[in-house]
Image (cartoon, rainbow, N blue to C red):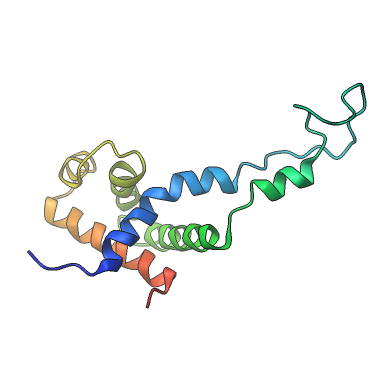
Length: 133
């Protein structure tokens, strides 16, 4: 078996973290633009402080870099031949974590060799966008 570089496992962890980063990036939701009046004075469980909440839910610079790298790799992959199938394979293995690479290959369906190739290409794409040293 070939020895993998340190970035290989690191990049796979970043790919696995994408759903959580996406939830966080999209968690700001609709923002109220009017003040909250009443006995609570705008405090408590009321949505009276949308700007502060948006700042709290904002991705850190490191998280944003990771999120952008995976999004860019997804966009590139979708433009490839069999792009939808490739993303389905990645989704089952990394994001849903419902299948091994072999099991996801059977569902897509592609050969195990093709699944390994698509998986490696996706990992390398994410690594390219991360611009790791």
